[in-house]
Structure formats: structure tokens, C-alpha cells
Image 1: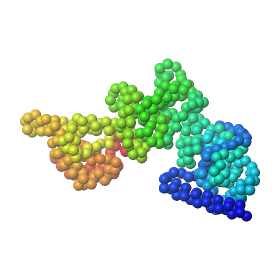
Image 2 (image 1 turned 90 degrees about the vertical axis):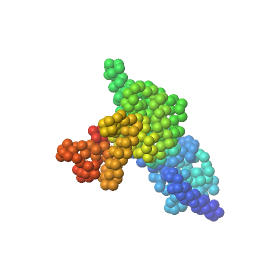
Image 3 (image 1 turned 180 degrees about the horizontal axis):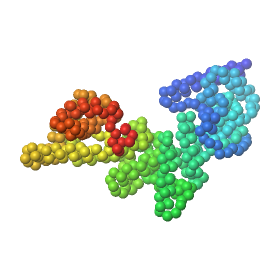
Image 4 (image 1 turned 60 degrees about the vertical axis):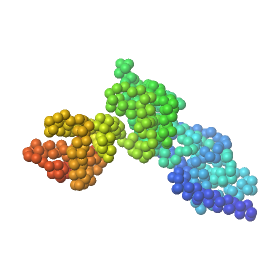
Amino acid sequence: MIFDQMAKYDFERARGKAFWRNVLSWLTGERNQLLPFDEVREHIPMIGQHYIGLQEVPIENIVGSLGRYRDFDRAFLPIQKRTKDRWVSIDRARYEEVDLPPVELYKMGEVYFVKDGNHRVSVARERGQLFVDAVVTEIQIAIPLTVETQVSDLDMKGEYATFIEKTRLTTIRPSAQVELTLPGEYDRLLDHINVHRWYLGEQRKAGISFEEAVASWYDNVYVPLSPVIAKHEILPHFPGRTVADLYLWIIEYLWYLREAYKEEFAIEEAAQLFTQNFDGWPESELVSLLKRASWVDYLILKHERASFLARTKLEDYRPQANIELTIPGLYEKLIEHINVHQWYLGEQRKTEVKYEEAVISWYDHVYMPLVNIIRKQKILDEFPGRTESDLYLWIIEHQGFLRETFGGDISLEAAAEHFTEDVSVESPKDENDDEGK
């Protein structure tokens, strides 16, 4: 009778722990759920399985279940009242020193799933056992599965498994670990491998098998970047990301640098510049940017804006100036406007006008008057995702079009109104702006 009371007390205490673990999980955002075996199998293909037999298994590695994943939390604490009778009977048997049969487990990677014996695992863990006797069947998979894996990770694990299946990378290079954290990025890795395959074929003037291309890409492109990332301690600047994430970002950033500056850059230099540019970015903003196919456009725009400001020194003369465009290549048009304004002032005054004076005059007497009209007419509301600088350029060009078409002088106010009426709610698309971002 005393053992029965003790076992019931143990159950209520365990449920109390489960309650507070659930509260903590809600507060911290950390998942507290067992891995459902069927869901893991659905995402990660099985290569094969074999019977291991009876062995001692670390209880902390048992974080999944075949059918009882809703009855227990991640620490195998009971969360459903219906488990009480079975749980209490197992716990009472422990007090009575009754030998219980070993549990039955499936093993995938480092993780064990309970096939039979969920309550026995729960009681053993609550009683502080570190190991449990188990009959184990191992299911072989191509990718790592660790005790930290959560249900929310399974989509990415599935993408990784598909990538490994297509490339056979872990067969070709058994020690390879190329795990990404953003959905859809493995297709970009496949693109890199296919480009490398083409490059090797051009270099050797011969056909290259996909397997050979995978091995060469891994050995000569991917792996050499790892020591660079380690040497400059780049990974800590991007918490939650992996070497594979940084490989993708830095390689594409290297391409951007070469395109933007029309000169060669070493991979080590690109890695350092990438860190300088993106260190400290809020994670959500960085992920949002890097998931976009057009993220390189952002880098080009950033470079073009920096060049524009360095050339005009506008922020020195007018610190409140906030000129920003959303389409690559248009900062040169602003430079043209300033140059034309400099020529116009010179003609008007019959004397040479310094570039500094032209920049200030253009900003005060050309740019800002139109921006004030844009604000007054609330035109920006009609063009989500665009800026006042975008609208300045479009309305100036529209004013020129109206003058050529209808003749006579067209005021900026009239041009702005006509532009808003004439153009659809979607902003005009530049030939370089395929996404209409």
C-alpha cells in the first residue's frame, strides 16, 4: 500500500515538472516535443535496417516515440492524465524491485525512438537512471540526426537527405557535412556543382561525370573555405548558421565583388568584407534578404549608393539628405541630373560653377521641391516598396515625356498628378527589376 501511495506521489510530481517545463518552453520558445517516428521517416529516407539486439542505451538519447509522442514531453515526463494508471504500476514495480523486460527501441543516427516501453522509459528517467536496457533495431539514414533535432527541423533534414541522395556526397566523401539552415538553398548548391562540372569540362576539353564533379567541387571549392571561416572567426558573427550557409553567402558575395568592381578578389578578402558588411544585422532581416533571389541586387545598390555619396559628398553638405533608390544602375542618372544642373547654372551666371555648389543647388532647388510635391500628394502610398528618390526620377522623366508629347511647359505638380493617374498602382518595372520588388 505504501508503495502505491509513493508511486502516485511520484506521478503527480512528474506531471508538475512537465507543467513547468511546458511553461518554460512557452516563455523561451524552445520546443518541448518528442519526435514522432512516422514524421521523421516521412522526411528522411531509410537506407536499410539491421537488428542490434540487447544493449544499454543512454536515456538522454531517447527523444522520440512511435505512438506515444503526445503523452510525454521531451524529457519523457507525463503530460496526459490518462497515462497515470500504467505509469504508477511501473513505478510501483520499481519500488518492489520487480524485474521489468527491456524496452524496444529504433535507432536513427544518435536518436532512439520507443517502439514499446514508453512508460518504463518515463519512470526510469524520473528516477534518475542514466541508462536503460533495450532491444535495439537500427535504421540507417544518410544524414546526421542528433538529440537536438526538433520537429521544426525535419523539413530541412528532408532537403539535406534529398541533396545527399542526389549527390551521393557522403558516399564519395564519408566525412562530409554540408548542412544548411534556410529552406530551398540546396538547389543552389546543386547549381554550384553543375557549374563546376561545366567548368571542369571546359578546362579539360572532356566530359566530366557528375560524381567526379561532386568530389572536385567538395575538395577544391567547398572545403578550402572552411579554414578561412575558422581563421577569421566568422561563424560567431552569424549565430545559428553553419559553415555551409556561409559558404553559399560568401561565394555569391565574391561573385558580386568581381561583377561590381570588375577586378579579381581573393576568397579570403571576400569573406572578411562579407563579415564587415553584415555583422550585427538583425537575424530576421539578414535571412529575409539572403532568401531573396535578388539579394545580390541589394549589394549592388549598397555599393552604388556609397559611390554616389562619396562622389557628391551630399551628406556632408546636407546631413538630413536621404537619397535611396531601389533599382540598380539609376544612381548614375542622379549624377547626370547634377551635371546638367551644373551646366545650367554656369550658363545662367556666365561663369564656372563648382561641383560642390552644383550638388547643393540641385538638392535644394530641384530634388527637394519635387520630393515635397510627392509628400503633399501622398504619391508614395501608390507605389509600395519604392522610395521618394525613385519617384523623383520617374516624375522628372514623365515631365520630359509630357513636354515632348503635348508641347509647352508642364509644371512639376501637374507632371506628378498625371504620373500618378497614368501609371498603374504597381510601380513601373525597370528591365533590371524583374521581381518588381
